[in-house]
Image (tube, rainbow, N blue to C red; front, side):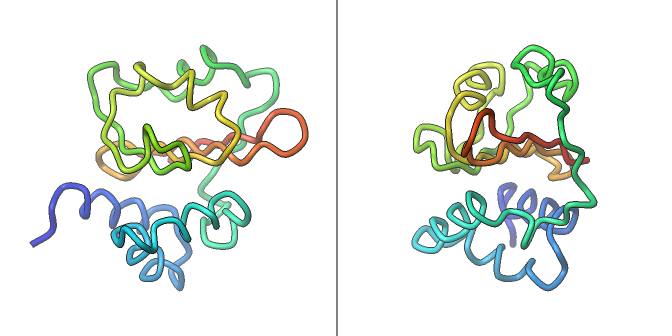
Length: 137
C-alpha cells in the first residue's frame, strides 16, 4: 500500500512529467541512492522530463518573494513537499512560509509540490542573473 508521500509523488508525476519518463522518475525519487540523479537532472535538464506545456513562466516583473507567494497562493498552514539540492529542505514536508524566501534565493533547482501533487513551484538552477521560475498547475 502506498503512503502519502508515494501517492503525492505519483500524482505529481501524472500531472507534470512526460509519460515515458514517469516510471524512472518515480524510482529515482523514492530511492535514496538514486534521488541525487533526479535532482541533478532537475538542475540541468528539467524540461527533458517535465512537460513544459504544464508550466507557466513567472515574468520578471513578478519575480520576487512576495509576488510569487501571492501568485501561487500558498496556504499558510498547509505542508508542501520539497525536492531540492538544499539538504535542509529536500525530501521534507514543510510549511512553505517558513522557508520560501531561503529557497527563492538558493542557487540550485527546487520543486515545491502541494500535498495533492497538482500544483508546483519550480525554481531553475541559477546560471546568469536570476534563475527562471515557473508555476505548474
